[in-house]
Image 1 (cartoon, rainbow, N blue to C red):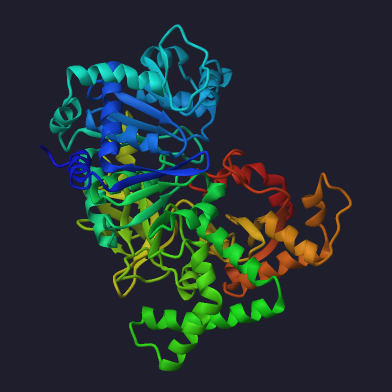
Image 2: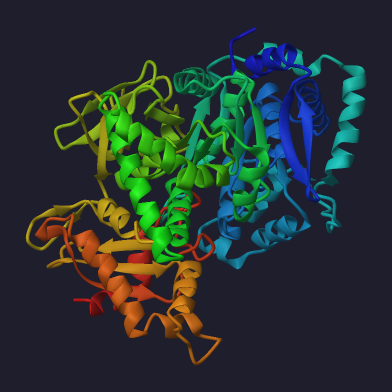
Length: 611
C-alpha cells in the first residue's frame, strides 16, 4: 500500500484501537470515541459516499464548523481517492457559489438546515450573475447534499438532500456488499493523486484553489509533528476552522501520530474547554494568545496590590526566560524566587489553560515577540511557525528544544529556503502545492523555476532561525521614501489590553496613522472602576470612546508603542472605532487577519481626516 496519511490512519487505528481517539461535547457532556470506533465511523462515511456515486477524482465540498464529523468526512474522502474541498462557514453566498462551481463539486456536506438556506440563497443570488457565476453549472455538478445536524430541509427536485442518518443507512448496504471497501480503495491511492483543493480566502478578487496531492500532506505531518515532539500520549484541544490549512493538519497529524483530539464547543467556550480537557499541546492563531494576554493583564489590574505582585512575578519569570533562551543556569536566588512566583501568580494562570500544557504552536499570522516572551516568563512556551496554504502549513517552526522568540524557527525536514535579492522568501519543498486549480497564469506568477515565491520578506538570524519582517505587498512606503512594516506596529499596539485590533495606514503619505478597535469587555470593566457613566445605553461604546479619560487611555497606548519605534515609522495620529473588525463584516480573514485593502477603502474618509 502506498504511504499516505490514510494508510497511516489505518495503522494507527489498528495499533491503538482501544485507546481514546476523540472527545467531543454534546449537550454539556463530554463523550469519548475509541480509535476502532473512529475507524468504523470513517469507513461508514466512505461507504455512504460510494452509495452517492462518488468516485476517485470527484470533488466533495464541506461547509461546516470544526467538529468530529468534518474530520471523519475528510479522511473518508481522501481514503476513496476523492478530493476534499473545504468552504469557510463565514463565506458569503457568492463565495460559496463560486467555489462550488469552480471545483465542480459532486456532493456538498453542510452543517444544518440553516446552512442549507444559505446555499439556496447562493443558488438564487442575483449577485452571482455579476461575477459571471453560472448557477446552472453548479446545480448540474452537484448530485447530493448531506446535512450533519438533524432538522427539516426543503427538498430539491434536482438532487437528493440527506440527513446524516439517512446517509449512513445508504452506506450500510454498500458495506454489506463490500465490507473491505475502504481498505481496498486506500490501497489504490498514489502519492501524486490530488487530495484536496483549498480555496484561499483572499482580500479582494476571486479565491484561488490551492491543489495539494497526498505527497504534500504526508510530507508535512510526518516531519512537523515528530519535530515538535508530539506523541500518542498527548491531548490536543482543537478549535481552528478546518477550512484553513492549519486546522486541517490537526486532522492529518492525529491520523499519523495517534494522540487524542478534543473538539472545543466554540471559540467563545475555549476558556471553559481548556479547563475541562486539560490539553498537553494546542495549535492556535496569534489573536487567541493576544486575547488571553489581554485577559491576564486585566485581571492583574483589579487592584494595586495584585498588579504589584504580578509585576514582581513577571520580572522574575523574565529572568528565568532569559536564562533558558541563552542556555545558562538559573541562580539559586532566582530559582527560589521563581518557585514563589509560580505558587502565588503563575500557577493560577497555567490552571486556566488546563494545567498540563507543555507548549502551544502559533501560526496563520505573525505573533509578536513581546507576547511570546510574556507567556514564556509565565511558564508557557508558545512556538511560532510559518507557512502558507500553498506550502501545506509549516515550512519553518520553533521546537521545544530549539526556539528563538521573534523568529519562526528553522526549516522543517527537507524544506529548502533562500532569500531573493529583494528580501522575498523562496521555498523548494515537497510540501509546496502542485498548482492553482484551473489557473495556470496565477501558478506561473508564484514560481521561479523550482522555487515558490511566498510573497513574504524575511532574513535568517545568526543562529539559522528565519525572521519574517513583513508581507512584500503590505510594506508601506511613506512619502519620504522610508519603508515601514505595519505588522510590527500593529503588534505593539495590541499589547494594550484595551485594543482589540489595529490597522496601520501610511503608503505614499507623510506619516503613519492607526485605526484602533476597542476590547470592549476590558474597557467596560475599567470604566466601571473609574465610575464613568454614559448617558445612553444604545450608543454606550460610542459615548465611552469620546470621554477624555478614555481618549487618554488610547493616547498612552499609542505613546508606549511609539517609544519602541523609529521616528519615521511612529504613529502620528489615530482614531478609535466604535466597533471591532469582524469576519462577518468582511474586514477580517477567517484566520483573523485584517484585510488591509477592505479597511482602507471602507474607512477612506476617516483615514484622510487623520492627515
